[in-house]
Length: 512
Ligand code: KIV
Ligand code: ZN
Image 1 (tube, rainbow, N blue to C red):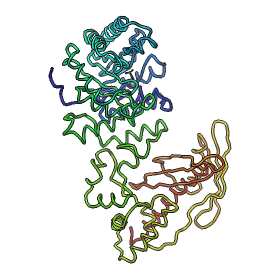
Image 2: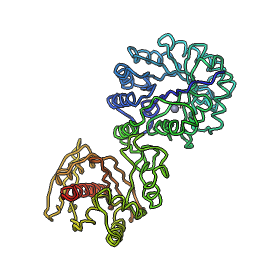
Image 3: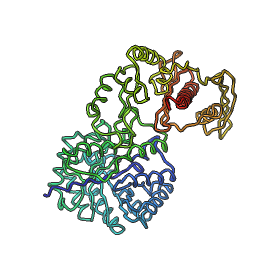
Image 4: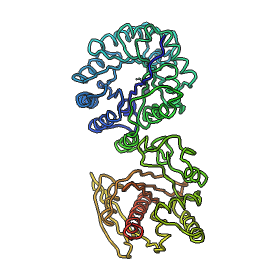
């Protein structure tokens, strides 16, 4: 048995396993847009869908197969002639088509899902792969619930699939039950026992029910897997699949340990993650590895001090390597003097000790009412420019107009005059933000928008957090209210006010 080569293929299934999970459905047009982004990112295989599941999925796979030429396009099929023929038709004309045929192999699935004997499963696998090979040269065979399948039976099924012409053998941990040591050992066993193991690629497909999908995929690679199936942001059935961005960066950052490489253009990871969030309307959590807002943000004084001396103290990769412009030293309640001095220096100020003490005290006071002290806040404190209260809400109302919602807002502007505007949107939030943009004359694209409820019953309040990236700077805003829509409007105005202040400051020549 040879040691497999150092290249690990990245098989992305965001458009199939990811898309089939609740809350992540995409239209055909969205799937096509995302397929182009995956190709630009450099994935080796895009699993574009399950053509026999719906006419829309068929059309999406067909269009992706015709438009995306530099990447292998896979389509999923049960080992049923109808599914396989649908894949073949949808992939017709693809530059590099793959049919991915699967059948469940575990005792539980054989008995309760398929009602089939071992022999029948083997027969279906054989027929499915054989038929797929009459259409394409590249056939992947998956043994669904492989991890909970008897090992010797798994070898038997895989031997049949290889004899019928499968070129990739996929080993799904369908229910996310494995641990890293077990899955490493399973891959070693399969590579030692499947006939012609050196002539096929072993693939891992790990689900995240115990939060182990990435760890298990890495262990599978140690055991000899040379394809990993994953999704952007870890989307997928239930708790999701292995997150592509985490897997790829683990292989890159710990290259010395794993000794393998991928073809992923890692600086495109963040934009690909953001695109998926925009398409599906699901933001990643703030503390998500690689692509979460906090992934390269530091607030505590001790960490900021370390970062200012040497970034390696608290970062194991450069943010630019995954698409962030830079790390962020966030000035908040936990920040220390060193970070404030550093931020001021970047803004062109060197203060004497007394002024600095006063400024730090003022900045800390600000954190009682806002989470983060922005550059605009610092400038305002340094220049002594008395804070204008900015734009404030006097009243707001929303009217359901059937297909659309109309929002009316009355705001007080910084000069204390009232401005009233209304706007239409697809839903209440879109209408509200459009009306606020009209009234203030400020517009921006949101980077993130989250609403949480705090407390319960009569004390319940909504908290909205927004952020927008404008001209390389991040502006975040927060609002709380009994009404989540009002909380959202306050948060939106918080961002707008910060943005206006920062632009006003930039116009002061000494600070330009
Ligand atoms: O999780 C799973 O077993 C699957 C297969 C269809 C590959 O998604
Ligand atoms: Zn799956």
